[in-house]
Length: 389
Image (cartoon, rainbow, N blue to C red; front, side, top):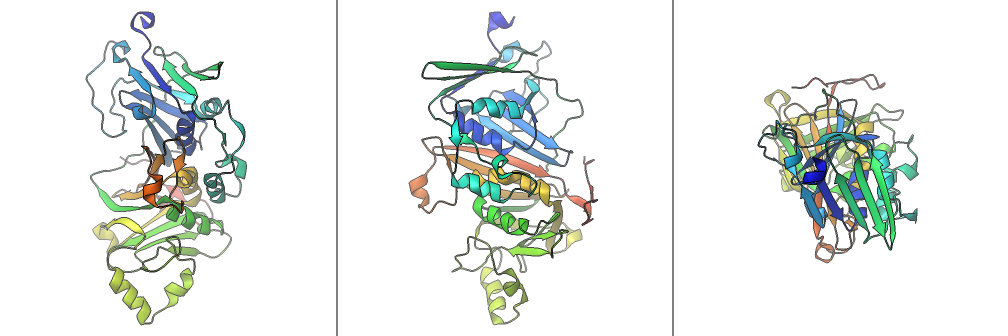
């Protein structure tokens, strides 16, 4: 039947670098669950059911995108799409080796990249991870043809790379996903925190905190009293450290206070006037909405494994903005907006050029979700909540 109706899915891209960049952001796991939809390809990875990375290759990233749902099984039902979430439909869903896919996409690469993005990502990686595995992607050549094809249910995922007469075909074995494999639930109708800011600000904060090798990341946010937004590292071999996001109008500190202790310990009029002037939000944030559950009072507090947060470092390195969201269950979502210029390169928010000069032609999103710690155990034996409804 596959021969009569054609393959279920075929997509052609003229820029493998864009695809590699997005998939490398969630490359902390070997395997990925893939779902093909009419609007794009959804890749999902997870670890220990407490951290999940989601990347969506929108069909706009491809020059041609053909999805033939008529080749689905006979029990096909009508379906709808909401954002990039799976809806339980019979869209093709399978597991492939993400590490093998990444190696395939860079098969024509030569040398190592020394880009700013690479060094930024390497700086936030745990000490146990070599810098070469953080974001040192080969210098991927642009303007090559990359074709994805999935012929029928159970067939391999075929990737064909062609450039200047050289063609390479790789077929990745597909596997059935586990029955119990579910997304970490995030309540979009129960959001208690939403902060949008430059991704570089978050990257800088995690870099500073990572220097003390903490085990736990503490998030504290309040819309009524200062410090309005603070990230703290605790449980490591050194003392606890904190980064309070700036509310100074004239501060030129990349969005964070490097001299955190001076600000915290000051009780003179300067501190009080700063709080009055900034009222509801740090000036480095684009959006700042905090409404904690009544059980928390006026301040929202949540703890997460610092090592899990670091798994989003590749996305921090290449993203322009990040949306930091928390729901009533305590699940944290870091959604990164990644912009590609007309040449296909990612445009980071660290650029010194005005935004108008680096306007991107394509926007994509990568989402990370984290389950909070229930009981704090700074020695590394903390329990995590993984049985959420």
